[in-house]
Length: 444
Ligand SMILES: Cc1cc2nc3c(=O)[nH]c(=O)nc-3n(C[C@H](O)[C@H](O)[C@H](O)COP(=O)(O)OP(=O)(O)OC[C@H]3O[C@@H](n4cnc5c(N)ncnc54)[C@H](O)[C@@H]3O)c2cc1C
Image 1: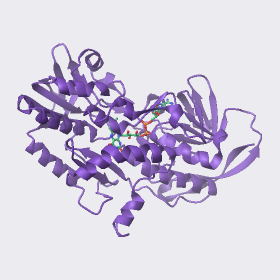
Image 2 (image 1 turned 120 degrees about the horizontal axis):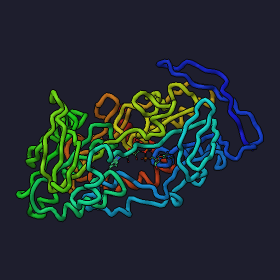
Image 3 (image 1 turned 90 degrees about the horizontal axis):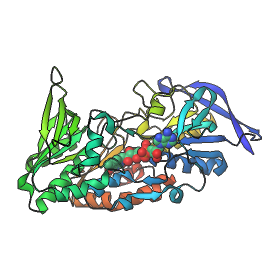
Image 4 (image 1 turned 90 degrees about the vertical axis):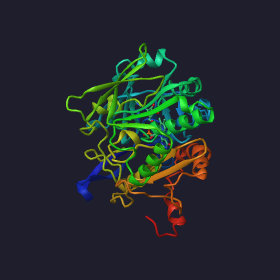
């Protein structure tokens, strides 16, 4: 038995949003490719939502379009780059962790046709849906920096924690470096985990110190941003660490070219009148590449002007198509793009969908909760947690602005468990409940 939902009423929501009251008509399912819910992307957000929807609708009615054989716990890549975890510890076969209550379509979405409730795939499938959840993550854009792909392919000292293909280069390069300039970059685009470009720098600095070569290495952080971190409380602490450890920071410097034969990295000075460039010699270069919305999404009718999925930031519902929803990095929700944000969004989105199906206004609203465990050495971490307004939203009843060993072990050993056993199984909606309990019900 299959069901076809019919949009019955359009109702005005807060902020001018609309949602549909769905009526489910029992029909026979003549089309094999017709589902109550299609989820595009089987990463953190896609699997969390597939697990939740699968328990409502059943395996045959929830399809996840995901091309990759492997699923990665990407937050572990900082630790892989620092030599604290192996790459294999960050990876699982998709088939081994895929929710048992959903159907995996191993394919890639190539076109969205929201007016006909259809997603087209690379292999030529036409998937019909009542509800569409878009969870495609970000597309890495190494090619936007001239010479970078060649440098990564040919120079063992050019690396990046940001992709499965490049993260394994980082630790060997740290081990190999004996002297000279170690440069770390932050691109001029939105990125996932905006703390990651500097976390690996603190690990590297600690590594060089432990191995007696720190005084022969200049550590340079060239960032497109005008600040070290977007939340003042944590930025202040990071700036202290940077000063203590004699790290050079150049703000508003965006990597535009790498010439690996000359060992040169070219940066555009973003605030200069004529976009002047400045060359740095590198001996080690960790690149956080430009990133953006996946092309398939960017060029579709469901994208906002900036290319990301256009959703209401507090509910995850699309701004134009009420049966489309989004979660995670591919949305235009204005908060830091992290798995922690995905966890909090998953709980809200699940309730948004329930409300929409019941013809109610969504009651549970997303506050922008996101988190960045800022690993600042081999045994210390500042656990940044904040909301849409870049205001701290801390779980623990102590000052999380201070670097702590406890937070380091939370990041290193416990968070992977929350991910594998909680988030992707639709059972971890972030620490909101614990925050309330630990603050005796008096926090947000
Ligand atoms: C180095 C690094 C460090 C990080 N550190 C942290 C951290 O400490 N804490 C934290 O919370 N977060 C961290 N993150 C960020 C976190 O990993 C992401 O924010 C999170 O994975 C986003 O989930 P998502 O579902 O939006 O996207 P993803 O998990 O990236 O999943 C997107 C999925 O969509 C699929 N897809 C893409 N295109 C298509 C298509 N056309 N059709 C179908 N499927 C498609 C992809 O194959 C992928 O499986 C880090 C990330 C990196 C890289």
